[in-house]
Structure formats: C-alpha cells, structure tokens
Image (cartoon, rainbow, N blue to C red; front, side, top):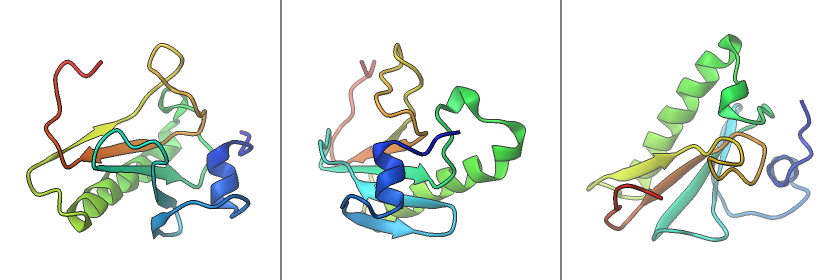
Length: 114
C-alpha cells in the first residue's frame, strides 16, 4: 500500500498540519476546510486506502480509531453529540485515498447527510 498521499506526508511531517492528538497508531488533525465548528480527521498511520479495503488484521486498529474519535470529541467538548463520517470511493465522496474518519460537531447535523 502506498503512503504517498497528503495524509502520509503529514504523518511524516513533510507538510504542516494542526495536530490535536498523536499516538503510535494514528494522528488527529484539524481539517483545513472545516464543515462544522469542530472538524477533525482521525488518520491511521497504516496507509489503508479505503475502509472497503480494510482486512481482518486491521480490526484492532479500526476499533482504536473509533475510540480515539470518541476521546478527541470529548476533549473538544462535543457533549451534545457529534457525527463520525468515513467516505469510501468516488461515489462515497472520498478524495484522499488514505482511510480517515471525520469528527464533525458543534452544530446541528441534518439528515440525510448528502
């Protein structure tokens, strides 16, 4: 799998980003084009291109990403709720082919989303 995406470059510190959390498995950054008052991206360091390409051996990592999203949402005081989004493929709106979770909060979210 290639890590030659903008997220791979951020993880390697080749380009700047506002990092709000980092551990051995993932990094969390502020989105540069926020769609809500709080818009964070939870990005695994393992370069999985799409959620549809995740494998059974990624199970623990995927759980870690969800729990990390929960922690950063709490740290950003999203006590009234938030939305987690994973885009997959062109029809799913994915633009960067390195798996990532969007944490969106700080405003009411509409349904259907889009």
